[in-house]
Length: 486
View 1: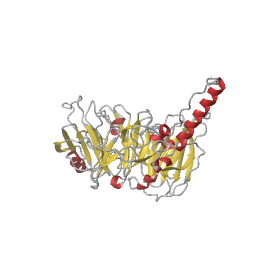
View 2: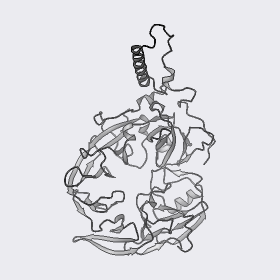
View 3: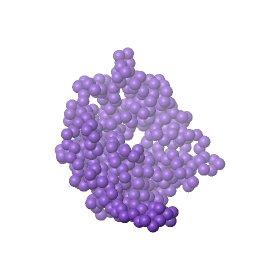
């Protein structure tokens, strides 16, 4: 990955400028002869120096010539004021340009009191946020499910239910049906919050298609389940290749959220197969018929192909060749493949197989807002870290997060987290730092200003509800973040 343009943004402090503290350091006084090193004088001097350092950091942060940096949130506490939400409550899967104004905490919802690190599940659907978590503080472990309407200034609770549960709830794999949210052991009714046990024991649900929930045990077996007025009924059971649930998360080009593919006539599900040992497999959710995408006898396990899920098929590729398969698992395309070091932003929609074929041939990703490409910093430059190229034809923008007033130097980014506003005026990404503490940063690419919130940096399981509202878990609280009011 190469890029010859390493010009820093005008508001990015250089190494020669130093920090604000260095510019405002106290001048050294001439030594005195009378008891200069006495204990009272040493104690007093140290106290004064510490005070100067603290005041200097507060009033003269590095990069203070940029007013936007002075509005960056430094610390947080659970009792800090919140601003409420005043956005448009719309989700176009794009980043709102209003994030160029900064970050505010919109509201907080406390969860399990006393449990500082509960396992929480979040899912947004329209303006509704669903949350579920285990409460193990009492004698009998319970599961709490809640739903909130987030379209107003403050969240409005729609329902809250509690059920006893002694089985472990695995939330990393879940399926959302028309009426329910299903995990390995529990099903939650989206309308009422009613919590029921699943009939598939500890198997994990991997897809919902054609009225069937497909579950897999993580080893060799998958099953299909249908529900009618009398309850759930197993429809089929199929043997598969060795399974690995992580094979969908490694995709940095299409960012799928479901394993279902369809051409409006036929529907298939991409199975969670360990592709380092066996080619990818599709399964028919109605019949349980399993289809290998390639011949296992000739499949090169030393050089397995990456799997890209499209809305109407599958594309597998390596450094040289891309294979395109339709919904039925038939090979329908073969072409040279190269990403050119490009990764797509995690926004927009799911592409078609023809969209992916065009991208691997060098076209812009029509389904995403932009491509991101890491800058070659082999010569030691710290900025920019990456460039983003908007799909709409706008000029490429360099991204150099400027966060020196918090004492951080960003050095890399996490591709799966990046979002870009139309025209790439604002970039959101998770960056790694030289201080080994990552952070979520909004970067105004027009002037290099960056905005961070320590509360946002502490959040886990970020879930985008609207273009201008993102929620996450901080300790035992659901916290929402929104652009700063103008």
